[in-house]
Image (cartoon, rainbow, N blue to C red; front, side):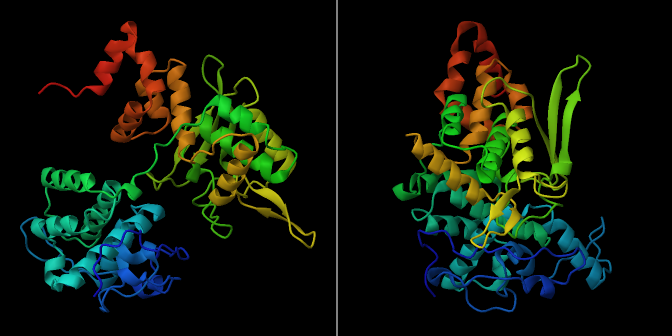
Length: 416
């Protein structure tokens, strides 16, 4: 078997139609799946049928079935339907995008095990030594963040199937740290630059807000920026990928909500996010100048007239035959249009993730506290601190004498 040390991320990340809670694993595995990459093709096994990537963590099975035990360690009877229901419930605790990312790691792991002839019984539970050798083998071919995601995928596979994950965090952190130092230069991403109010203002000059796509793109841009939101929360993955149970619609907007002091905010409920299967609320207030998200979204609604059940940033599309239809705004369409508008105005195109970073930066520069901005942007602690350390503009105000104490208190770990 070819060795699992290719420098490319596996090209097998197709998604498949959604499944019902009570769908059988065979029905779920029947989803559309892409061919494996030549250097990442696992040996045939009835435990690992070819399936869509987002189903892999559920459909691929360890050799031994889940053991159901009481508090005394004694087995008790569980029906096959109950066991499958539990498997579905646990797998749905992960967002679809996360399952796709983790599936790549699980594939690389099993191709590695195939290449070494590792027996099925030794693959789960995976011993700390096996995981260590796996990381050492792929180090130098993948970035540290990719290896971290791959290990998270293997761990999630253990959790989903009720197999104990034996690797302790300290050992895992040490191995990943070492592997990161061996990451190839080609795997290291350029630092993500933040969007700014000035950048968006200039970008606006390259858009015609009377054009349906431009109106939708600019409304989405200003909403995600001032909402400190992930771009993927306000766009859809594909034209056929819109699902009102997962993606935001016009009906999910609560306009001009007032607090006790009469201050108004507009709230957006995203039914499902990367970190919450039950949805999260994003919000912004009216701003001054051309980047005002309130004016932008009202212009979009006036130009595109999305229905209450349409994607929030659906826009009118006219095909070559002159037929007009409503299209949900895909992430690809958004980034493509923003890139062209930036280049037309002589700007260097920025990555989509820079929108959320930029919104965070803007609020910090306005003097909002770290805790307030962290809560508004729904940042996890570690990732929030990482961006604080990377962007000097965020740090600068807090280096002034009167604000140093707040900065130190927030970024320094407590004494032990």
